[in-house]
Image (cartoon, rainbow, N blue to C red):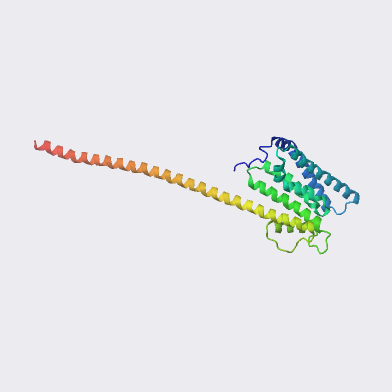
Length: 266
């Protein structure tokens, strides 16, 4: 599979910045997920611990915002950069509202997805599997964080959140669990879109594999037919040569008795 087009091919300064910061930002993204998982899953932590976790999460998110501003400053055509990264801008601005803070997770997914895309370029199966696991884990944490304390919520445990994520991302949607809060519905909307996109990638990959397999089989069949035709031509040539040799032998055998009978009469 051909490597995807580099979006920073004409932005060398941004490309250099990305090469320097990709791994540190990836480490911060992993740290963010770890802290966020701790914050969501540990229901026995103290108020002081919760405050410290929230400060750390906000600090990491602010670093991602600074990364966006630096890349914007380095861009040669800033208008095009903003248009190409509108989602990044939105998920950095909207989480300032407490009800939309779950969108901070989108920034983390974007950073990790960028690293996955570079590490597994051309390996669609590994890339899709990694993306599904990442999105599923994050969505489960996010919807549990949003729904656990809501009245009439049906998603109150991490196991229930995982089940809801699985049925939603696969577009099955049993309806036994569903979000009732604004944050939960934002997560659900994003997850449904992601599920459709991932299924499209998987379907396209399978179709591509079948087409490639059938094309290779067709090429092998044509090669086998050509080889068999060449062998058949060789066999026919041998048969013709044998027939010619037999004809010569028959003529020789017919001429020999005639010569002997002629000599006898003389």
